[in-house]
Picture 1 (cartoon, rainbow, N blue to C red):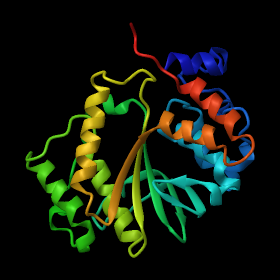
Picture 2: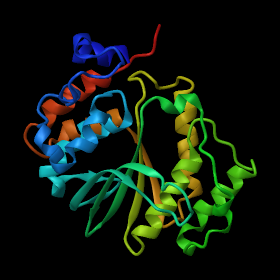
Picture 3: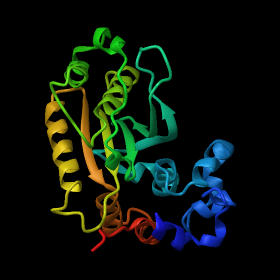
Picture 4: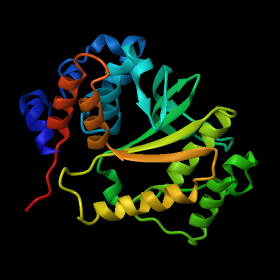
Length: 257
């Protein structure tokens, strides 16, 4: 993302497309101390400011001191924010990864983050074990969706349905008995309206949301610009508006004319 590189400063990058100092990956106003004892795990992700992890950290680190004011997917009153988490599903192998989990007494939200990687139209692989996985009835819509995608009865080009389904199953097993939302947050150009493939991406999301509407893990989707605009408008805590302005500057992309 050329605009992002120019905004941070080309001289701050090394020869491998990464930042020489990971602290340059944080937008002004975000303190490196917020990373706490996970600084050694997360700093490599900030060295790649175009990565989903860096976008997640820059958007949500400021909320660590104001979690009770954060509202996501209709849930609020969070007490914990966890970055770069895993969601074991009960299937052998590496558990699926999720960029953020926000939890509190009123419910849990897992945020799956996409930059422009969805344009590559890649679908994650599904282990045959998911077809026989024993799950609560509340997760049945996601298992049926997995089966339909594997059998090509349902086709998606831009939304990685297998990846989202695995996350939904993992979250449903871990946080059973609590309201759960799987929040899909994505980047798109500011002028993406009425433009393919971005319209097609949103159409697929709307179809997927409807398909799992009766699930115990409901899917919610929004763009980062929509999310940030809400934060800018409401400004739940001092200083957030300035951080949002910097995020919008860094990650603003316009369609070529």
